[in-house]
Length: 193
Image (cartoon, rainbow, N blue to C red; front, side):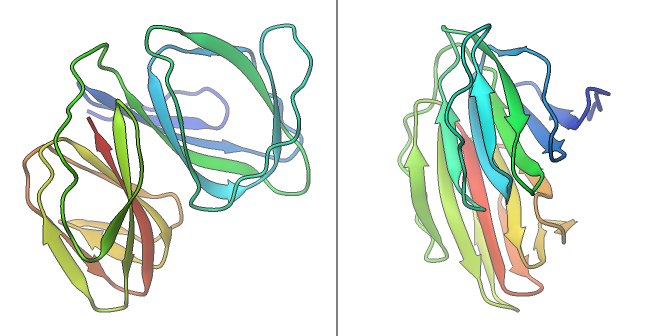
């Protein structure tokens, strides 16, 4: 089931153990105070600089993130709220993956695939960088659900075509999936542990 929420700049795909958020905030936009209560991994899709404020506190320093940068915040068990303001000349775009488990995260070892390298690990996620030249492909299986986020190029993930930066595909746990590059590809595969 996919649900779209009409909160400005946010769309979501919800499944039993994960949610995918696509956030697109224009230059100068300030969000409402909002709370996160589950571990969240974000993949930066556009490098618009932001500042954040917790509650009624002061604005933090400007944060700039490179396209493809991955960040994890462990909110499960310690929910927090904040406000985000887009500063500078570019929109702020990210694809976020929320692991809605409260406990019982997987501790399985990383998969082995020559096209992928582990970028980071946390209790709730493992992120891999994926690079394939035009025409190349790789096939593998993850024991947990995976979200594939496209950064550059065009790719097919199983039968799902991704051609725009930030587009994503969700692969169920234990399902073999082929990733086929239609152009040189740079992507992030996120295991939801």
